[in-house]
Length: 376
Image (cartoon, rainbow, N blue to C red; front, top):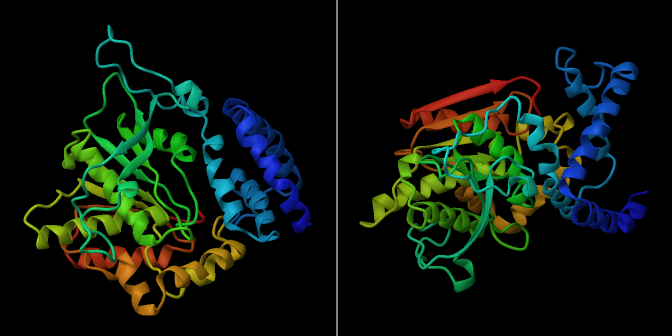
């Protein structure tokens, strides 16, 4: 069955993602869910999720995600899935519960191509050649300027109102460093920006493993942060870094690199207002604790995803010493701006997220932790 799927999935996905308009994909997905949910409620009810107290939607999603454990997960399949994340976040699903940011001047027309991109706001596709990189990052501390083709910042900038907002969210998507892209995160990033008072969101692209190194991803995120400061003129204290899963690891590594640079160089980049880490993947050593035990029920990082993704940590980072040095949870937190950590007690990264929170707090960082049950 898997061999058959491998033959048909590529043309099917190309047709779905390239030929079917985004709005139609979103409508089809929601109609399918509207049909599926009452059927699941009648036949299975609250018997598939982690606990009977969670919502019927959660139980239905658990049953749906269970099928991902049957087929071997490949990098191609992970990338295909995450590229369609935006399909599950259409603007019309939250337009009535989230008020769009008001126009600064009612006589000025707000630029808006959002409908074409499936959001309420205006999207600017960023492609900018940076002249220099000011923040040494990762394993190449002595390198301050990258190669010419490394100095290009790409991504999606979401403008919520008539003019760019004063405060901006730098959204770093997740995907275990193996997958993810800026366009797939447009809907969910805009939703968070609107809930935070109408903040613009910048979603930079970054290089992925195994084609590139983890250090390349950190290089790209550091360059994207500097793009906001020096090319768009955003004040560092008005930037909040938000990272999801492996994106949370990159956000933490970036803030640690910024603090390190301030200690070593006279000319350094100012710190952002803070970092928000959602289910952060921050320990790249041999999986232990919840990272090993919770794959049996985690909806996203199941056994199949685990078997495909974890070996790349050893391939890319090498020995245990390198993996410790690359893990943000084992680095210094002294001098970091405030952190907000959101994690479920039942997801694979729970233990490492709590260890990071404790270490950061013990080193003087203002840390806020929000935990929820069964959200995995």
